[in-house]
Length: 306
Image 1 (cartoon, one colour):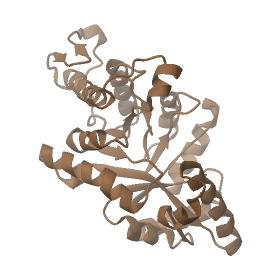
Image 2 (cartoon, one colour):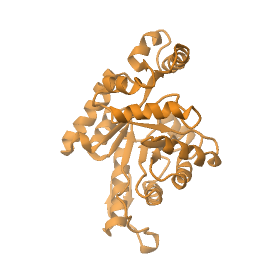
Image 3 (cartoon, helix red, strand yellow):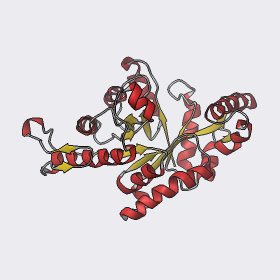
Image 4 (spheres, one colour):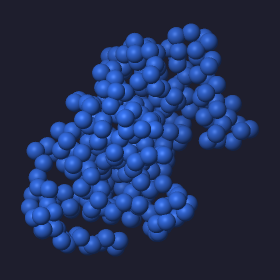
């Protein structure tokens, strides 16, 4: 199990320095979520500021963007990072698509699946010189002239992760994707039943192995070096559980959704809780680019030791 993190900033000028700090601490990946700002622009800045850490959106909204646009963006970032880019895609919900982006909400699962397949067909054209001849239910791509063909990469094509909660999309991840971003509000039991079993069904259908996909998730961890720190963090986690769940029951949720311990204990507790379900975790409420770096180095070191 590897430890990754995310970065939330309000300006492109605020990306480079924390991205370098996060890389220097030893994190596996740095993800940027699509919230108030365009994630790919921030990732482009992070690409120029780092040299080792994996980079990607967690996740970028797929339906407001055409597959060809996504293909170009990911191709450029994969080349500029020397093979460190991860294309993370997700659907969001109907209201945001229709009312915030004014795009049609239709067959979201099949359309997400077809987007992934279309992007791969475009990449195959660029990498291998194959004819672009993709015809699906939602997209048709059949024109790629030399002037608009960026040509092959010297590194592998970008892996595609999808973030989802529906059984259909979880199965799709298992069938055709290299990775999966799980929703942060889960228990180990619900993750196994609602996500992992569907991913495994997709893997089996496609004749793939569990090692062919990386499953990552934000996790809730109450951690600290003193009782006061742990109590403070516990209240933040309670508030998160209360936000996602019903207020009448969130007191009982804490033990289901979070682990509690010192920085040295957290990796072992997470591995005990999730077993072989997760390959990579992000810890809620962490800001390693601002916090005491010694604590995060201890935490990352403990992950690497187990």
